[in-house]
Amino acid sequence: MADNIIEGFSLYKDKPLVRKDNVICYGDPNDKAILVLTVLTYKEVHGEQIPNDILIQVQSTDKNLPLVERSLKQGMKKGLFEALDYGASWLQNALQ
Image 1 (tube, rainbow, N blue to C red):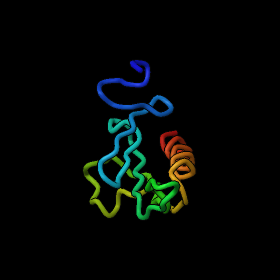
Image 2 (image 1 turned 30 degrees about the vertical axis):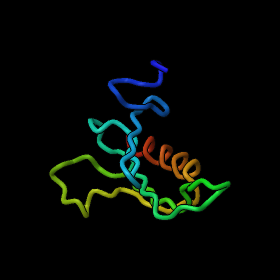
Image 3 (image 1 turned 90 degrees about the vertical axis):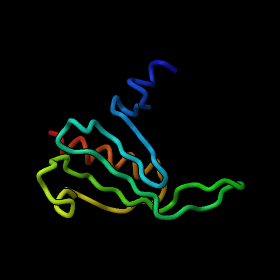
Image 4 (image 1 turned 45 degrees about the vertical axis):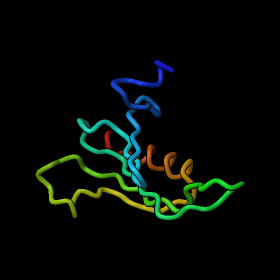
């Protein structure tokens, strides 16, 4: 378990992954961009609420930009796995 936790955060592909309510942030805030996943809808599967429609955004961490100009790329996916997989790829491209 200790291998998956650094400074109190869970990691995915060696980057912090944090969830607050319907928003999941992925990436290092010290990098030039992070990934923000927003769960818009849920579906019920075997009595559990599972994220369904996910808004994917790669956002600049530049504090000098207005909030409306921070989105570098965005899209929609069904399911958390697909959204995180696509988003992680987009983030990696944005950081290169």
